[in-house]
Structures are given as C-alpha cells and as structure tokens.
Length: 120
Image: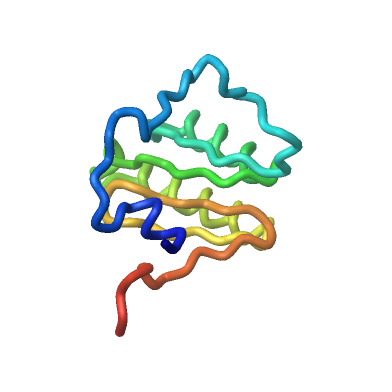
C-alpha cells in the first residue's frame, strides 16, 4: 500500500482507533528558528500600511485584506502606491488577489501568477 493510499485511504474502512486526537496545548507557537513569518493584516487606513511596510522591511510576507479600501479615493491609491514602492525597494513582489487581498513579499520571494492545479 502506497503512502497516498494510507493517507487518503484506499478501499479500507477506518475506525476511531485509527486516528489520534492532537492537543493544541502541546504544539509550540514559537517558531523554531524560522527566518520569515507570514502576517495577516486588515487595511483600513494609512496607519495599517505602516505596519505592513515594517513587516516587509523585516523580511516577512504580508497578506493584506483590503476589503475596506474599495472606495476610489486618493487614500486608497496612496496606500497601494506605498506598498508597491516597498516591494520594489526590497526587491520583493506584490500582487492583488481579487478585490479583497494583496500579497506583499520581501527580498528573494516571488509570487507566481499561475494557479496550482490549473493547466493552460
């Protein structure tokens, strides 16, 4: 039986004894020497952009929820331009995913523009 068959199950039936309950209290929340973190941010104003910029300058990836910035005013354009400039300054990358998310990466991290599992 192959590994994938054991993971997703082949033609075998499973019982409750086949599974192990994980206690989340036993899982460490500390990163074990990770050199990069992924931050989730909600952008509702200029102050939020400052926190995102600092995280990217520190070498971290930020996934920003920009749902609250859907209006077409100069504040939105200013924030997006600032984030683009940060990505350019650190030789990172930035993409907008749909209408509600932006992903900003630091030096050496590129964002693929192709979806996994999609053949073109």
